[in-house]
Length: 580
Ligand code: ADP
Ligand code: TZD
Ligand code: MG
Image 1: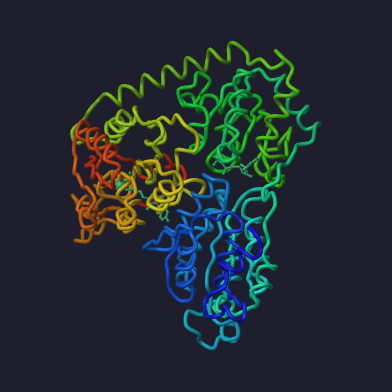
Image 2: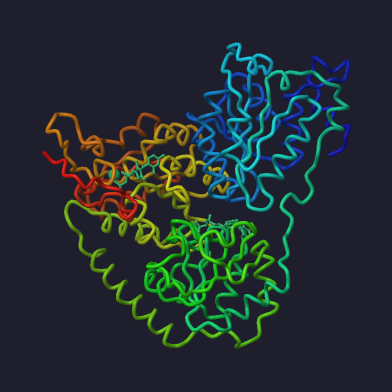
């Protein structure tokens, strides 16, 4: 856009004669100049006019009921688009509500920017008791990839540019940008404001790996008898789906997708070793991590889950990730797209060959585990358990490979990951690196808004409660989101007892027979209560076909789950019998 166009649009009428503008307008112009098309937020002092003006200027504004959900929507929008998702919050409490989401985005490597208004710095710094007083930038620092504050209106352009670059370059993450009320309201010369804007050129530049790192990795793979590839959500984020697929198919190496990498290759791919997960982790002799970290989700790469003699190759954009848990014999620093294309260029035909006994053993373990799973899926107990309910949803999704699947809970999450196959990349969005509850409605809204595609959110009844009020947001924007609440009456299970014998429910118990479907009816959505797989499958099919907001409350046997889902090993328990 030309300078004169920007000036004309940037200048509020009242200032036209003197060609002045203000902080609000300058922020909106800085965002637009950098291709920001959406803001997720909660309005209030001092950012109400910023939200209004952004909307007037053509940025889509989605207003939430709680900042944490707005932040989660921004984070997942960032993950899906490789552009920073923007979350807009008011000072102090609104800022802190959003901070959990920025921290979660940072931990997961999702690019987002929380832009928050803040109170008068002179008063805040002397702790004189301003309205919503808090030293926000310093509060944000430990939980974000970067935190910036704009203290002069002429620095707005630089502040926005630095925030964008910090969010998307290298390992993406959550960034905080503090905009004090007086900077937003400040009047400045329109021409100077325009001049101060910064268009960020190539915000996430390619990072080409060193050629010798590629040779080292290919040599190690060539020496392997029992190679294994692990795809993490960094691989999904990189949008290098075709390169990843051709590398896996060319080498013939079996692979495991981490939860959010399911669908980078379809889960039905013959080289997927997901159904033989513990077998391959324990036996692989050379493991290639592509955009995956050896954190708790992979048992830190340690025995007994892993072979103590396994050697590792790791492709990652963040060099400090290497050696964090196991020594990395062949580190490749670079972006995954560039790294995979370098690997494909240098690979010698026939040089990498997984051993036939390895592939046969994996096939046998896969078959055994698939048969065992099939028995559970077909059992059809009454009341429903997690297997039969998820099987019904899986069947209903057969015709809809493009539906986003949001998933949180404990048993609901762990069974959901294993039973719901993904066929397209970046379609599974879940509790991620922290195993956090509360991402459900925010992720569902973010995915629906950026894609225009339908979303199914499969939610534990506890998990749903963390962001449940956002069903009003879903209905207000008429988003194609179908929420399925797996209602087992509690955190993990619904049948725990109060060990004191008193009348209060156990700490893990939630209301029995809660009618969650009635909540959405209050906002004009469709609610349904189901207790058998056939009704569940039909309800999901109908809701997806309608393209309208729906909530299906799904009765699950309160005894069906296990404490902590599949994470019993991380759950410390008292050794002293406290059962009276
Ligand atoms: P998962 O939980 O699926 O194993 P993680 O979030 O633990 O995935 O790991 C993702 C890794 O991918 C991070 O270490 C991050 O630095 C890396 N990463 C993210 N984007 C890219 C990219 N474009 N290229 C290379 N590595 C990336
Ligand atoms: N708070 C936050 C923010 N994140 C968490 N992970 C928890 C609390 C602890 N927690 C879990 O780790 S899973 C879970 C909680 C409260 C809920 C499990 O119950 P659910 O799922 O109803 O969602 P299931 O299917 O009953 O296991
Ligand atoms: Mg539950």
